[in-house]
Length: 74
Image (tube, rainbow, N blue to C red; front, side, top):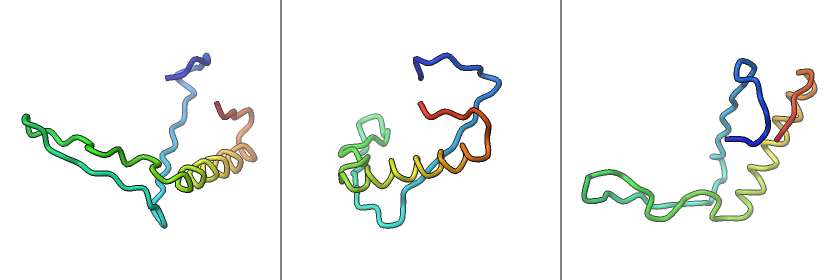
């Protein structure tokens, strides 16, 4: 969800995974309805993981900006 206007026919999705060297960990439990749920959220429990992910995103967006006219990071 974004607060910025956009043209849905001109969207692009990029999925980025941080895996090598990641130290953030979580735990998954199963509730009474047998649904898996995070017991301990795994996202960015280590501030270094967060900094590395942000740098990675900036690197990817910077590389794409060099080849795609009028691409903006929001």
